[in-house]
Image 1 (cartoon, rainbow, N blue to C red):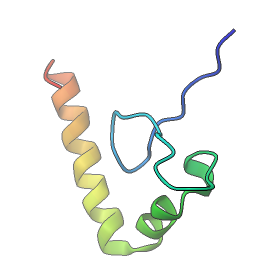
Image 2 (image 1 turned 90 degrees about the horizontal axis):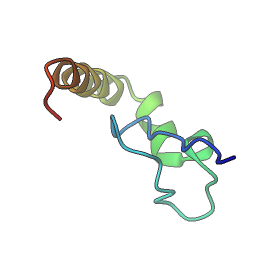
Image 3 (image 1 turned 90 degrees about the vertical axis):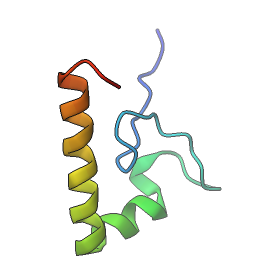
Image 4 (image 1 turned 135 degrees about the vertical axis):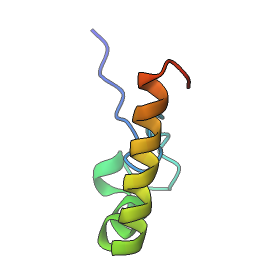
Length: 61
């Protein structure tokens, strides 16, 4: 049985690629932590997530 691939919280629709050294997934990614702790970045991420959901709902990727 294969393990589920964790999704990147800051790149909607993309898997976590472990793009930083010494991380095991999104849960200990410093980039994710920095985005989530910054109000402006978190607001921009919310916009990108909403746009992603709208594209998926309309059948576009």
